[in-house]
Each structure stands twice: as structure tokens, then as C-alpha cells.
Length: 354
Length: 240
Image (cartoon, rainbow over all chains, first blue to last red; front, side, top):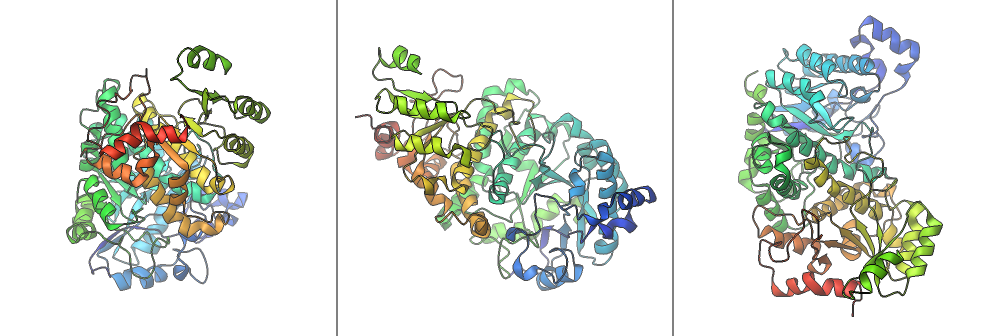
């Protein structure tokens, strides 16, 4: 059982249906959506199909609507029994990745408005990430500017796999705005499906796709490193959300070695990549793709090389654990204490100074 | 590739060749595999891992079956271009990103071969991952196991845990060898993969080749060194 006062860094309120967003759109976009009949489409992201077992724990499935769409259920399943000090809402929705940048931005604005009205205003424990049109950095930065004055928004939400590698300079307006407002950038598992998960092509099964999200994180992280985002934005922090975690050490070994060989190509990358990652990158620990035995887990945690990096998360309503076993088994007590509260407070300045 | 065998293997019998095939032309691939079967100069069939579709897809199954039936391991040697971006987030700017993205192509292949049930359908299939490094393989196996348990209704053809299939059917070559920050972590990595599945490679003459004297930054136990530098390849390729 989790002690009261923990900080849950990844929960997923779901937009119940597109009609719900209509009051939160401006007149033009409301009419646009109604004339096209888009309100009849739920616009959920293919990265998180509502019917996939992993995305809705059976006992968290509400009587109506998608899992995660009811505040009362979230309170009954997580907030009341676990009594977290705060829980960070990360909405995953097709709005983030639509082909039309304007429609994408309009729906993201509506989702942020809906988050304020239906979630943040109704439970003081809730915090949220700003949902932005990930393929439109200027409009994303505008949305960050619009929402940042509300200090219950503690992060900017991106996806691991989008049109352009995340480090690319076209994306820098997002990082500039996030850094200015003391908002970490949370990179969540998922894809806008502009590219297959690697040069190896498109797989057949959702299982393949979900497993591939870890390699999407590796590529995104390598892009942020190689493009010099951590040097250009020295106060920016990055949180990898729902990544699986245990892929990271081997990736760091590889990237460190590559850097030693070809660093002349990226002269701004002036520190060992693993050192930058330990200082600036955090990871939510649900799911935690743990090795099967305790000794291997201990080795793996040593390889991670820092007790400051892991953040507690339930990933509600995704199904990674049963009952109240919301922590990966076998983590040492000292690490757990840091994971549950301290690391999140150090990562999200707005949790301590509202 | 008769040129390969004639120009390299005939004058230097310590050299063995890989059968080169065109994955997207099934008839010619099958013909070439059969033509080279039984020729001791050919040790394996080579398939570039960046294909139009992941290798586990049904359209490639007869080629993989022919490799197994003719006693050839399948080597997936990094290279080629499929037209797909190197990463799931698009084309990277720098070789600094491209080089580690090779790992992601290998991960797609392993994931596909496992999830499509290829190893259950072709129990004799042996796959060698070449020039993709290998320290990433244990975490991929853990991840596949974990999420297979949740999503297995989608892949009812998979009867055995992904990690078991990987351990049984997949070999890795060492170059470009990952260099753990704590050199001894190389030992746990090899233990998790299985020392009987790791084979040394130099990648001569590429810039990032591994020198056999310095590749491992930690001393391997003698029995592991014997396996990794010699016996695993001798057994797999039937070199005696």
C-alpha cells in the first residue's frame, strides 16, 4: 500500500466523447466540428485503443464511457484510497496529432479548458500537463503561453514519436516556452504514426506497437541530446512517461560510445550523454519492465546510476498492476522514499510553489 | 554470390561467405538459397534488417523456412535502406543518432519474429543479429514478456514466453560492443543473454570495428571466452 502524500506523476483522464468538448471550443471551431460531423467521432489516439486490455484495467472500467473518463471513478480508485498529495493528469487524445495544425490546436485548447473545468476545479489534488498540437511548434508555444499562468499546469505534454525527431530545431519554440515558465517537458509513450517505429517497417499487432514505444523513447532522447537541446535550454527538464525504464542503461552505454567516436559532428554536445541524462531526465516507473529476478533488478538499478531519476506513477487507468500493488516489486526503501515524493518535487517546481 | 565465394573463400579457406538474397523477390531468393545449400563455403543467409515490412510478416515466411530447411542460420546484418525513416519519430539529423538507431531496427526485427510466431512455426530457425550491438536485448525480452502477458489474447499463436524464444533462437555478434560505465556490467549482460548465444566479431574494416584485444573492458571467465571467441560460432556454423 502506498503511503498517503505520494505524488502520482501519470494518470490519464479520458475525454468521454467529442461532444463533451463543444462548450470549450470557440464559435468558429464548434460550428466547424458540427458541420463536419466530427462530434460523432471520439478521436481517440490509435496508440491507446480503448479496447486493448493494457489500456483499461478491468476493475477500473466504468459502466459507461472510456476508462478514465469519470472523476468520481478516479477518486474512488486512486485519489481516495491512496490519498496522493498530487496527481498529474496526462490526456492522450487524437487532438495532439491531427494533420490539420489549426484543428489540432483548437481541440487541444478545448481539452485544456475542459481539464480546468471538469477536473482541476473539482479536485484540489489534481494537476495537469498542457496538451499541445505536437506538429505545430508555434501554435504549441502559444498554447503553453495561454495556459502557463494557471499554475496547476505543471508540465507540457509531447509524444515520443511524431513527425520530426523531438530535438529538431523546428521544435525549439516548445522548449523555449516550457523553460521560460518552469515547465518540464513530459514525453509520453505513443506515436502520431507518421513513421513506423523504426526503419524496419510497420508491425502487425498492437503488442508489437506497444513494445516499440521504448525504442521510440531511445530515439527521442538521442535526438534531444544530439541536437543540443539540453545545452540550448539549460533549465529545461525532460520526463519520460510510461517508457518502461529498463531500456535506458544499455542505450546510454551505446550513446556514450557513439559520442566518443563522432562527437566532432555535434560539438555543442560537450558532456558525456549519460551525465546529461542523469542530471536532466526523469522517468515515471509504471510500467517498469523489470527483469525476472531480484538480483538482476538490483544490478539494473545500479546501472541506472541515480536515485533521483524515477518518479512514482500509477498510470491509471492503464493495466500494469492489480489491486493496490502500484509499485514495481523489489525496489529498495531509500529509492522508494525518493520516488514517491522527493523526486517529483524536485522535477516539478510548480508542485511546491503553487 | 558466386563472386564472393570464388574471390574470397577459394584462395583463403578460413573465410566463409553469406548467401545474399533479395527478400522482396521470393522466387529468386528461394532459388539462390537452394543453389547454395550444401556448399561448405556458405555459412549463412544474409538479410538486411531494414526491410519494407518487419521480417516476421507472413510474406517472408517461406524464405525463412527455406533457410532453416537447408541448414542455414539467417544473419541480419545491419545495412540497407527501406525508405522508412530511421526512427519512429522521423529522420534524424546526425550520424550520432543514426548509429544508435540501428539498434531500433534490430529491436523491430526481434519483436516481429517473436510476435508473429515465426519461431514456433519454424523450430529450426536460427537468427544471428550482426552489427547491432547486444546489450539492449535483455530489456527488450523483459518488456516483451511483461506486455505479452497482458496482450496475449491478440497473439494466441504464441504459446511460449518471448524471452524463452529469444534465448533459444537468437544469436548476437558483439560489434559494436556496448561499453558499460561499470565494465563488470558486461558480465551480467552476457549472463542475461546467455554466453552460448554471443559471438565475437570485429566488423573489419569499418571505423567502429572492435579489436579482439580490447573489445571487452572486463576479463571474461575462461569458459565464456572460449564460447564467445570460438565455440559458439563453430557450433552454429558447423565449421568442423
